[in-house]
Amino acid sequence: AKMPEPAAPLPSSPKDPNAPAAGAVADAAAGQSRQAPAAPSTQAGHGSGAGTAADASAAAKGPPAPAPDGPKTTDKVYSCTWKNGQIYPARIIERKQLEGRWEYYVHYEEFDRRLDEWVSADRMGEEIIKSKSKDSPLATTESGQKMTRTQKRKHDEINTTLPNELDATTAALEHEREQATKVKNIQTVELGEFEMDTWYFSPYPEEYSKCSKLFVCEFCLKYFRKSKTLERHKGKCDCRHPPGDEIYRHENISMFEVDGGKAKIYCQSLCLLSKLFLDHKTLYYDVDPFNFYVMTEVDQRGCHVVGYFSKEKESPDDHNLACIMVLPPHQRKRYGRFLITFSYELSKMEGRVGTPERPLSDLGLLGYRSYWKSELLEVLSKNRGNLSIKDISQLTSIKPDDIITTLQSMGLIKYWKGQHLISVSPKVIEDHLARITKAACLFEPSKLRWTPPAPMSSGPKKAR
Image 1: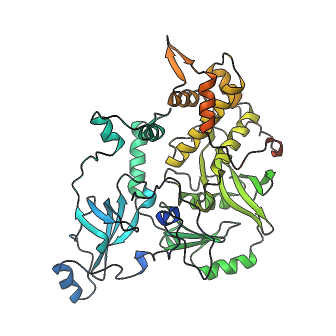
Image 2: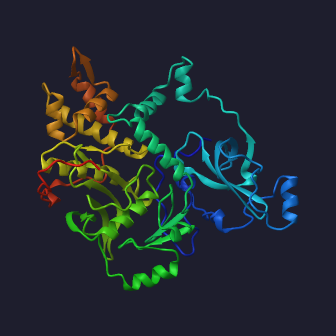
Image 3: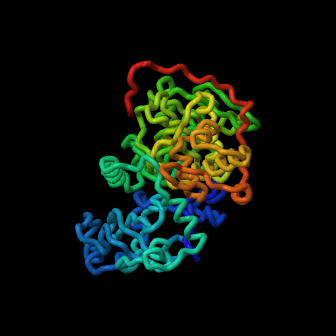
């Protein structure tokens, strides 16, 4: 049995007072429901026995202080039992001792940080001396063996070079950020009828960041430490939609444009909430230079937030999207694709090309690659003739660099005598289009009611 794929967990289940809490990513992917584990930080003695004579001796003298030397060492790889009973290599990031028993915060090697968790000592095994797996695509390439077609496609989708790669300074800052946020501070969050396991660290104020579970109002996004405090707030909160202009409504989907300078508290709360599910995000409190496009599902109770993207009001680098996030319960509904399409539709109305800010998350990268492929193939299928990269960019508002890398990943472009030439036949286009899954949540251009804002200033633009 393979470890559950971490890239796209299924939606969380609605909260039921008589049902078990939402499970972790692995159980959600398997379509199972279980009782959510209590946060180790609030349960003393979680896990099984101490495991060493030193621990037993220390326990006999009363609650011990954290010792510098424990059964397992940080920054080393050990075998660890996953929730489904399978064993995987995991690196110890942090450790703590509660009443003589050790608990470890582990990162499962070769999997995303969103699966990091606290585990009890009885789930930890022996130290593993790392060696390259014969089954990994990278080892297969280095050993000279040929990749399978599936391995090559997955490897290319993730590792194809994108424009605007991180320079040395940005890479150093990114490493510093990872070290500062390596341990999740909040384990679960309750929003409306959903309870969600969090994925990453979020810099909530200290008195809230120490809570294992956070309670958030689904309309105004204010956050609380206790359920009863949220219930009292609901009785007074008269907000039923995001504090901005509704610029799109089709069936039960509505989009609101929220000015970060006018609704600062709401936008800051939205950023803190989204950071629980985004690894590469640094904007938390400086929201004034941004507009937020909030996607909601509408019912008789109001407009419920399902995702959003943010966009700089003035971008010197042609960025039409800064951050994008869809809440876990609403993933696999093609809402991410809808938000990407929406950002490019705004660019078309502005008469300019756009590109997302880097770095992209793993899910963001896959979403953009899917959008770019389908858009380019659609244009090529409708315009059978000589099309240049510039022509395609004007038709789609996609930046030329993104067009080139996407066509390269599909093998539809060649570099000859200093120029990029599109080399494609109608049969190849039809084959690619046949493999593309049609979006379930389609954008309806006629429902968009939006006027591009006037430029903020005519002076020189300042980068963020």
